[in-house]
Image (tube, rainbow, N blue to C red; front, side, top):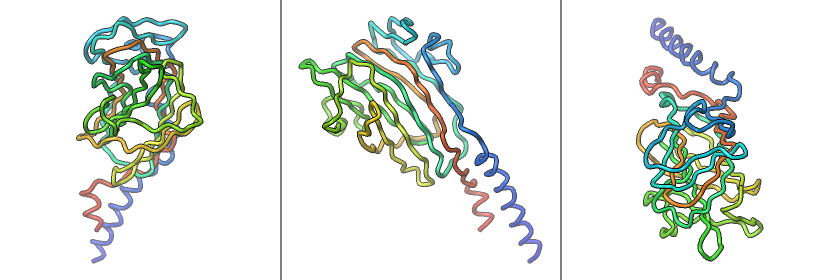
Length: 236
């Protein structure tokens, strides 16, 4: 019996060793793009994922014109571990003259089984709308994709707006995404469930002109690493 207790205590000790370094870690910046260099030369670099566009750097900003099914993506190492209470924040500035997504993703972030997408549109009549992704896509024609904006938010998609998205991971992987535009909170959105442990940040557009800058994905709080299911079973 003492041998069994000692083994269980040893397993718990190993689990604590795995957790403590994560709790002690300082703020971690996964992606930081300030527009001082071209996207493919940034660290980490934005890889061309399909299509084409005329890209240039103007006033320290990433300009995207003549879009033809254009997509760039940053793929980070897949997360092998899950965390409870790990707090993430994605911030970026974006101006878009697109009038329709044409099933493009816009700005998308994927993190261990969850995905979140945003796409601002400047409609023909001058009105601007903000779309998010659903299981049907990120579509102007899909009512569930339209994000309800506060009455006091003066939103023009073609202007250089500041977006902030924050989420906190959970063991159930059912976390939500809090969204701000120009420091005004617009709501909490569900995001989408996806397969796998992909960690990536992407931009995809099929129409319009776009300006992107000050893109940063930060882990504000490291959270607690959840034990491997096999270890948890052994402890039980």
